[in-house]
Image (cartoon, rainbow over all chains, first blue to last red; front, top):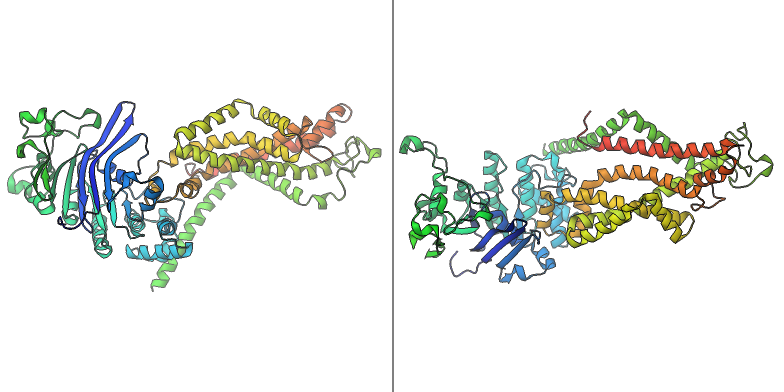
Length: 327
Length: 296
């Protein structure tokens, strides 16, 4: 994770806009970050701040139009946005794959589990139907589904939420991709299953040497998994920091607010404070405030914040913050 | 130990799939009207298959001495103007009518489903193009469209099938497109795209099976309609040509003897009526049986 290794994925000045009848909606507005081979990068922010759109933009899964993606997304030195449709399709699932938020609806109800997992292997590894099926069973065993042979012949309605997410992970890992975009992989699951899935993902990451972009609003999950964190707010990156420094010394008031809103058992007894909240909600992409986007909700707001957008201030390597207080 | 466990899991899985099928079957069985429709269709299919056994001899060979006989023991439904047994001609006619029904829905499905899938999935200009052509075709009454196509293609069995089939295509396009519009937004379609699945595979393996229920229902209803259209063309003398026994054609030639020998027109009419009715009843029954929202 130093400057010596080349980044696996490098996003530069990515803009994703949706052209709607109400005008252009800027879902992602000029973000940049890198992902290094084998690391886990956390992408954090509230609902609606553009995390999922960023992931979908990388794989170009957004329908264009109405979406419009601008900027540069380098994957192993190639700009994905310059590639043709067919070349992008070959990268999907093979080099970069994605785990979705909703395991209950992300599996096709009319296809057997084995069929859905073997699909990627059939497409990218030129396996025959039978080989791919055997491979799918192996993948199910890898994600710790008991009785993978008979389970692979079942339809998704026989699987519980946690098992479906395991199946989705098996699908994402089946071609041994170098990067996995995990879009809130545990949000729809209950807490005990969340922990199982996270442990599984961490273990598989180590086995396969895969890099993960972990998209979540759950800082607890981030603390367990990520080595570095990028905090997003209203389509922009507001802070980036290695995991320890982020929890020890958050610089951006938004990050501080996020950390303050993690429930801790016994906080009230120790500090006398209730759970902190950030007042208000993320502004809609159509009503982006002037100046710093966070200023209407910020408790440290100064005059400058209201009319001038703060610059990105590089504090150290992989340590940057976009706030006037640091300028 | 593990083996036993796996076996159990497997059996439960099969049992559930079978159970779903059984539920649909149970719902269909409860629907008496659909059951009557199904049995009637079975009777037509069997008589089409075993026509030479049920009626030995040539149904088209004239026997002028016997012409326009009322029902007798020898000819249970009487004879037509050329002395041919009406029962025999109806039995052989079921071959033609069922052939037309199957042919027509095949044309409708082969052209309509891919166009509907493409139109719904890609949207945009492709969708606009396909939908405006569909609009134009739907602006004609279906029978008139078939009539116009026969005028272009000419008469005969093959052209009857093609013209009626084409007049059914816009209905299939609309139906499939509408279903695809909702299915393509499903997460599993996006998940399939995210592993790099080709569009063709997404369309036919991921989306099509999810829209099969309305297509099945429509197919049953279309078969009834196809038989009716074919009989209409035959009645006007531009469908299947005599001496081939076809119900509509029989009806058309019986028109002149309507007052002396009404039975000549009545029985083919009943054959058409029952065939269309049974396909419609079965179609309605299937709609209820295959819809998971209707519980019993």
